[in-house]
Image (tube, rainbow, N blue to C red; front, side):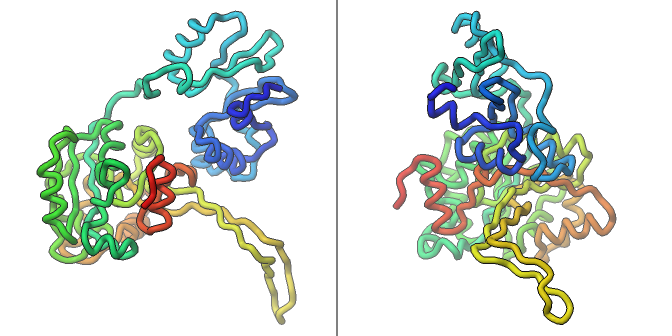
Length: 359
């Protein structure tokens, strides 16, 4: 087996389950893994493969062998490095396995080692409006938020809000609507002075706190197409086109982005029955849940279903849709792809993840 540590991090067995594969992707900071068996190349597993399986209601515990694609692109030993680079450019793949005649892995070319340019897909740009909920008080980040609002807290040389906007610009979004309340003038003045974002930014003001969705009623007749809604304290490392394509293909009214989150109980758990008798015991069990990531895609007619000037959460809107049997979809992302910066420890963790110095 090749001794290269970078390659070892992306090699897995076909017997691994979906959850284990997601954890390896997060640890390696990759969205593509190679499947080998006794040094023989079996296939490639992408994050998209896992997401599609989970959307089909496949269980986290199934082996990846059940979802492996039969078709994939690899390079052969006889090809020149120039030819392999051309293949990588054509497919925009983050790495390219190089195999011999017996399908044994002999090398891997990584995009970030071969090319200076950043790897970006050739997908069509989608100019989708984005609403960013930036009106909260940021109480969990006090005392800093006593001075500046949470959306303007720095991540490196940019504010949190600018980082979020830049991510949506990669999708093709040009129109941004900021729902503001706390220190609204400071946020407005900051972006009025910025001239390098090259997007359209509008502000709409909550006169009072209206919850996570209540202020959307102020956009009635402003937004008439499918649109994103994002909290101002989360970053999702995902191609937003994938979320949009899922939403549109399934004709959802609203799609929630969810995080695959693991919780480890550091104690033995006991389930009891009638009379207090023990039914079962588990030693330090692990539970896996989908949690709300704080990003959504909505159809514009939903704005009409939000009451005017009333406190109203996005979960209230979702309950309302489900009660009339509307379509509410969930798009899963890995825990490592989600950065929640609403608390000090999580904010510092995000700084480290993005390579910025902590305070």
